[in-house]
Amino acid sequence: MSGIERLRELLERAFPDAEQLEVHDRTGGGDHFQVVVAAPRLDGLSLIDQHRLVNEALAEPLADGTIHELRIKTRGTG
Amino acid sequence: MSELRERIRQVIENEDVAIFMKGTPQFVMCGNSHRALEALRAVGAPVTAVDVLPHPEIRQELSGLSGWPTIPQVFVRGELIGGADIVEELNESGELAEKLRESLGDGYASGDERVVDVLATA
Image 1 (tube, rainbow over the protein chains, first blue to last red):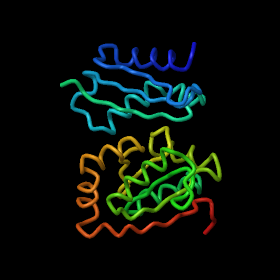
Image 2: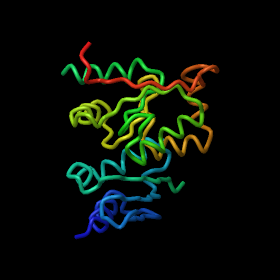
Image 3: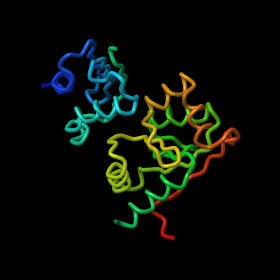
Image 4: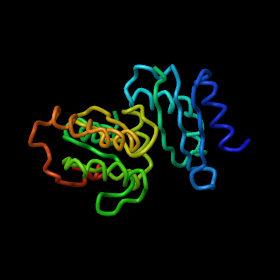
């Protein structure tokens, strides 16, 4: 499974009802990612708490070195 | 608590604005650290920087304290503000300057930059 697919699967699991869910490989090298998540689960949370949920969803690839660099863009849907 | 962890904790709690980054403000070693630093510079924040690259333990202990997995990490008076994306977004919305004024007072914008070596023994 490619890095993109793995990240997408983890994010889909964490945000099953996401309105928008994107994973981009920024450099083509498979380790610099940008993710975009808009989901009801993020409603009413501060940016830092929204990013925390994304970081939690991606804890494994963050810890094992799959993700060398991660950019996060989040918003609620409310 | 390890001595290193304690020194990191002191930087977080005692500095007005602390950034844990790859490299130093004079020689930035990573794009995200650069983005966060530039956002802080844009609002004239007084910046105390810690380079996490000299030893992997700095990063481990930092993330253990903050619960935040990536670098950079920006703190204002002990409070984690976020990484590059958040600091950049807060700068664009004007909330970063507002947050600094609220926490540090109207005259916060000295733009001073210094580097603290958390590995150095006192």
